[in-house]
Image (tube, rainbow, N blue to C red):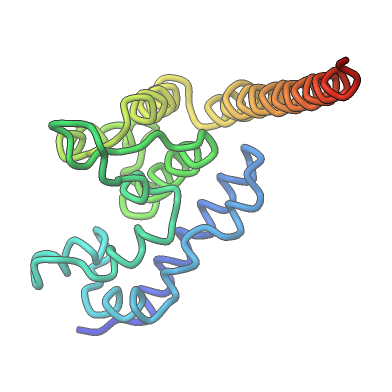
Length: 211
């Protein structure tokens, strides 16, 4: 049965939950743009056709067609999915691998997983739900070790300390530290570029006045 209204409500409720979660940790732009591709007909129509309400329609599409075309479209346009970062590698013995995700997208992935658990589990949801879901599927993941370590740390922190404490920790420790590191790198690069420029200018002047 095609259920466009039910599917629309589910994805919109999820988007609003993720938006709220992203806002709480300071990711305002990502919260506003999260999962907008789900309203594209390429993703929305299969979502209506394979809607169940208890799991992602992408899984049902896979069972029926062998592949989820909606998911292939979705993962290529949303950087908070680790699958977006999978690419060919020039390393021997590793034809493809997961690349390291920027911290802000790992945090969005964390929020996405937490809110998906809330959306599908409803009253059965607990602070451990997202971690438990991750544990069930981790053997299938092709994720960069640093990305996976950060995701697991965040999910574990949530399970042990609750959502409010986890959000506070992400905002003050994870994202704030990441911004400081990026700023230091930017300043260092600017200083180095200025030094290199001055050295070239000095060298040019020396060559000009050589006897």
